[in-house]
Image (cartoon, rainbow over all chains, first blue to last red; front, side, top):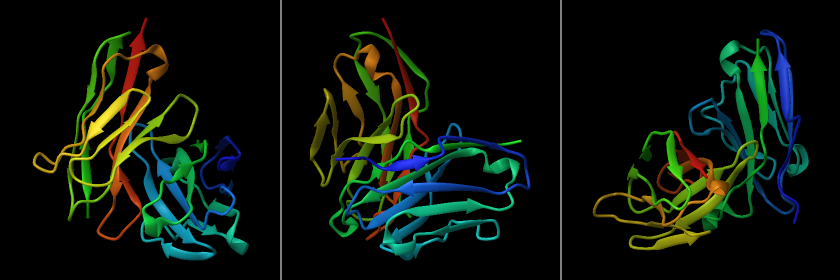
Length: 115
Length: 113
C-alpha cells in the first residue's frame, strides 16, 4: 500500500514570499492532518480535515496560513506571506477512521526554510 | 488538555546497550498512548501503542507499559543496534474524545558501534 505522499521535500524562500505544500493521503483515509514541526520540538497540529470538511483549525494562524482539501482527497497548505519563524518541517498525516482510535500515518514532510 | 513530558536528549549508547527513554503524561481519563520514531530524513512512524492501563506495546524489540499509577509510558529495549538511531516521540490524544495527537519534544538516540 502506498504511503502518504508530500511535495516538495524541501523549499527555500525569502520572508514575505508565499509557498504551498501538497499532500496525498493513503487511499481511503477520510481524515487528514497537517502538523508543523519546529526544529527540536514535537509536531504541533495545525488543521484536521474529515473528508473535505474542517474538524479543527484552532491552531492555524489564519492571517497567513490557509488549507483546503477539495474533493476530500488531496490537500494543500499555503503560507502567505511567510515569516522567519515559519521555518519548520510540515508533516501531513492521514488515518482511516479516527473515531476508532486508529493510527495516524505520516508522510516524509516538507522542510521549509525562510530567509 | 492532555500533555506529555519526555526525557530530553540526546542519548548516546554503544551497540547492545540497554535503552530507556522516560515519558510521563497528564491526561483526563485513560487515553491511548503512543511511541513514534523518526529516522533521519523520514517522516514519523508508529513504533508501538497501548490502548488501556497495564497494556504493554511492543515492536522491533522495543516495549512500553502503560502504567496509570505512575502516569508513565517509558520506552525500553534490551539491546540497541546502530539502526535504532533516530528521534523518538511519546504522544497521546490532545483531549478527551480527541484523536489529534500531542507530542513530546522528542529524544534523539545515537547508537555507536
